[in-house]
Image (cartoon, rainbow, N blue to C red; front, side, top):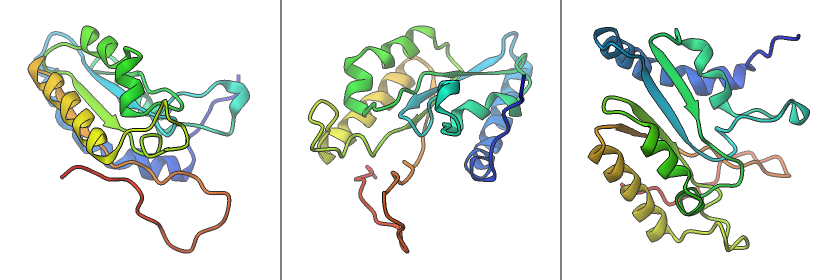
Amino acid sequence: MKLLRPSSGMRRIVRPLVPILIAAVSVAAISARPITVFLAGDSTMAEKLPEKRPETGWGEFLQAAFDPSKVRIENHAKNGRSTRTFITEGLWQDIMQRARPGDYVFIQFGHNDESKEKGERYASPADYRANLIWMVERARREGVHPVLLTPLMAGSSRIQRSLTHTASIPT
């Protein structure tokens, strides 16, 4: 079996998350159970099928950075999901049913929310903000630590010399 290794691009994405999880490991060392980090997001975070390689989501590689007896990663991210569809399809509720006080949920959405041409996904900037606030409030109510992650720039069919801001991120 060939070992899947993250690309340098994936390492650049995952590396900034390591300090947050190291702090979480410190808490887990005191606890009798490992903490769980739940991943809630879209295709940029989701696990991919082997036949879709080399496409990968950064969440696929996060568990390899930690001792599973101290930190467990549960990747609930799904391709094509927006904040709206993640909630309406019950994916958020699945996380909240599994999460325990002291766990973490990493939340990353954006490019599917802005897809007006895909009405089932679309969330207006106001709805996007409201959905993220709703997720954060629900997590905190359960004693789960929410971490909002900046959405990745969606792919483009043409090479761009500069990044274009398209997502409306709540402040």
